[in-house]
Amino acid sequence: PPFELIDFFVNVEHRDKRGIFAEATVKVRVQGEVLHTAAEGNGPVNALDLALRKALTGYYPQIKNFHLSDYKVRILDSEHGTEAITRVLIDTRNSTSRWSTVGAGTNIIEASWRALADSVEYGLMVAH
Picture 1 (cartoon, helix red, strand yellow):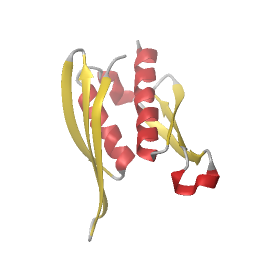
Picture 2 (cartoon, rainbow, N blue to C red):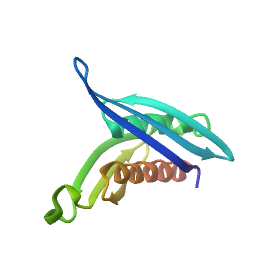
Picture 3 (spheres, one colour):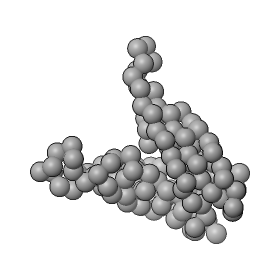
Picture 4 (cartoon, rainbow, N blue to C red):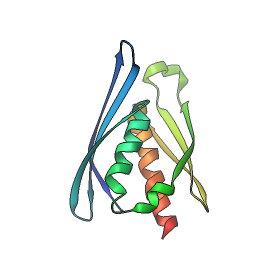
């Protein structure tokens, strides 16, 4: 794979006048080098996306052309309510292709990460 996740951390706060504030830190290994980046976003998934892009763009500049075009969340076992398994579908495009990736898990952030990371990996394969 073009990168390996070491860890990530996401913090979401409600701040009095700013509303919701999200920050993510991502630590990945790329070609043997450990990269640790942080980014702020309008939500946790946006912050993760921006932090991952920040880490990888120096190695893979084509990521600048990847655009998340849709993000869908669905509960797979609705009888469990907020404990349900969540499926995240991400649609991504660049100037020549479109692709979809899926992540699933009991934690919506983890499911989103899986779909997001797979989207970047697939896009890099298509771009080569």
